[in-house]
Amino acid sequence: MKLYPLFADLSRRAVLVVGGGAVAERKVAALLGAGAQVTVNAPLLTPALQQWVADGRVAYRSESFREGWLDRVWLVVAATSDVELNRLIATFAELRRIFVNVVDDAALSSFHVPAVIDRSPLVIAISSGGEAPMLARLLRERLETLLDHSLGGLATLAARLRTRIRARCPDMATRRRFYERLFAGRVATLLRQGQPDAAWQEAESALLASPEVMAGSVVLVGAGPGDPGLLTLRALRALNEADVILHDRLVSAEVLELARRDAERIEVGKQAGHHHATQDGIHALLLQHARAGRRVVRLKGGDPFVFGRGGEELEFLRDHGIPYEVVPGITAALACAAYAGVPLTHRDYAQSVRLITGHCQSSHDRPDWAALARERQTLAVYMGVAELGALQAGLIAHGRASSTPFALIENGSRAEQRVITGMLSNLVERATFHGVHSPALLILGEVAALAPSLAWFGQPPLGATVHPIHAPERCEPAAVDVLAAVHRA
Ligand code: SAH
Image (cartoon, rainbow, N blue to C red):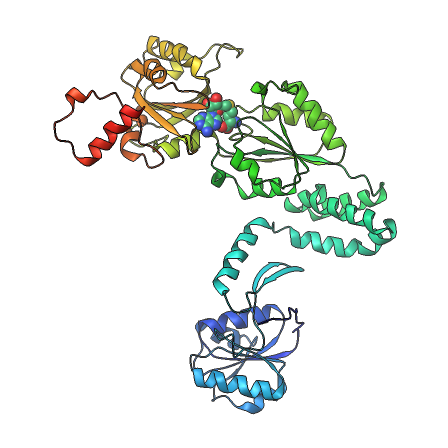
């Protein structure tokens, strides 16, 4: 079946809906939304339909369907559970050349109702020609998440400016470029932030300036810990709109995979041995690309404001007058805790959590050991594995019990995730034994004892070494698995 897509103007046009159940109610709601004059015909109505009738929004006929009613309507919807009646309505409609939709019967319908993404005045309609409505619905859900709600406002703004844009950019190529920038740039950002007036001003000044040059901008985006499923929708949209992506080494390949195909990707990881490796180098790149009018995404592992120097980059952008936005990400502590089955706070074990970095030597002040060593609090330590020794010694020296449990999570949320558990006294020994490498996050505190029983992702935690001699002669299958995991490690 081949369908001709069309959008119908039903405002103030009569439409008949036969049926008074939940399906009819949904159809009536959509028709009212389009401004149609709806008559419902059914012996019984749902409460919502009754309400609309009582409010005078919908006309009502309770007697049985009469073919003559079709003479006065533009469309008819048959939404009854009576197959024969539906067929009859379809036949009469066909004779009168009125379009009919028989709910759940593609063959009897002369028009179909698509799955819709509504960003009025922009509307996207999806049809599978009645063959796979479920698939159309799934696709709709996917598009819903990708398309920001501010698109409607953008379409209205573009409509109001249309004549002026045409006059300002008479040739097609310039006009196209102008629209592309209008839709992806600062104007769209302001609309997203609920500032239509500022967006309008921005669009006007863009028109007054040279239409070829529109200001670039930077979006500071948190890419999360690695699992692309932990990206936010806003992050995904920013990646879809980017012209250039400056990313850290920590950002996973799977996340980069989701970015717009023709976006330029530049790795600025400080350990990458790259010539842009310094913070000043990164600043210079941000400035260069934004000044060239590009949409720059500065993509950082985890959250940009947690040990990510995001603050410094914003200060720099502010000082240079480059507009920016920030999209938070799931920081390593939250992701590693979740993926290792370690609740960071727990009524019985920890009332607070501290996010700290183990890079003590480079920081200006000495760590407040007494505060860090306090009991019943969780420490989430972002660090290189090399700093574990100093941390272990410092905490024990300041009174944290050497039996305090830990979970060390390497490659948290990624397929290669490993979780090593133990207690403060054997932290370094266990990390060395398992050859833990970066990126790894340490969770230290009473809550870490929950890891072995709450773990759900990837391989089970690597607990204290079990020597085969001490193992019972007959193992339950589950116990054998644990031993095998320990031996593999
Ligand atoms: N802004 C980032 C942190 C950057 S500091 C965030 O919010 O997560 C870099 C440190 O983060 C690493 O040394 C490591 O301790 C931690 N980290 C980042 N991703 C990680 C991951 N997938 N697994 C374990 N630790 C991670």
